Length: 354
Image (cartoon, rainbow, N blue to C red; front, side, top):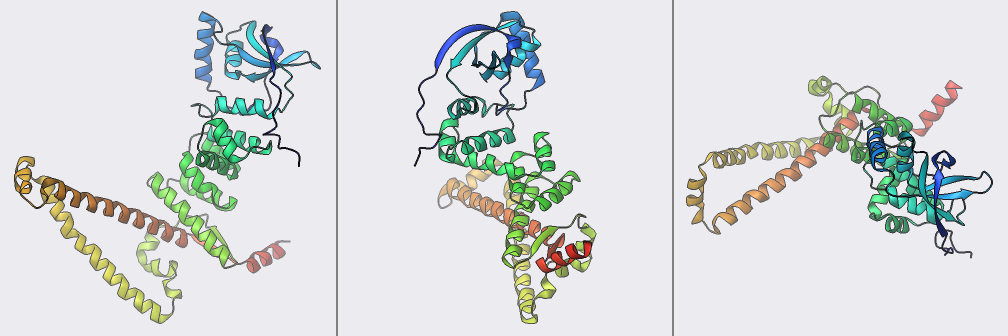
């Protein structure tokens, strides 16, 4: 078997220094970086007008056109054009063919992690390296990133066009975009509609909703049906008006299960109501004078550290309970605002439409 492109050892490229007319240098169409902040380019251009070019760029010569193509340093080249510098100091790399994997890997490594390189650009660059024969582990090593970072960026390439645009414009954070990328294309776009309407109070609620959507998709797929978010949001009044049990499937349960559900619900609500006592105790402690609190607890078993450990434990459990309730709320919203469509129905609709 022939060795992979990414692992084949190539002879070191010959390098020479040369001053080249700026107009004879072209952008590499395979450059992983696509966005360059205009303000930062103008700042660099102003510096280059004043001080000149402080660091050479790397190029390769194209004999067929008698021109040069950038290998590294596109930001400096763009700034030089703005500054109207007639010439640039260059390191000319000889013996490098177009699409050379090692050269592209160096360009990716140089750009990945820059503030103005977008997550999608990083994902596209990683994917190209994989297409050239690199493993994800090798990509992570070459670019100085963790394997998890590389995988997350690659997952972003599953985003639909509207979601990609929202991410590129900063309308949706990258962490939330990753959760949404795990959804089907149709549900991605429906999620984006809900997000842009401001239907989520914060990003964590939006992430929980996306996760719940993904679980619903997997659950419905295992039953041979499709899960599709409805386009219209569920009105809060509908939930409050007594429809919640029906929407969440309670009425679909057998009678004996509904009876047990009522018993379990009462037990849980009773436990939650008892938390009011703990809340009152914590409020009392919070209002106490620190000196008096220290005097009272210094002689208690374990002293102040033991009592603080007890309250820290309550805080940790409260945080976990809050997360569980957030996820439950997201699951309820997903279930209430969704449609489950069987393949037979979908096929029948398609036939009727035809």
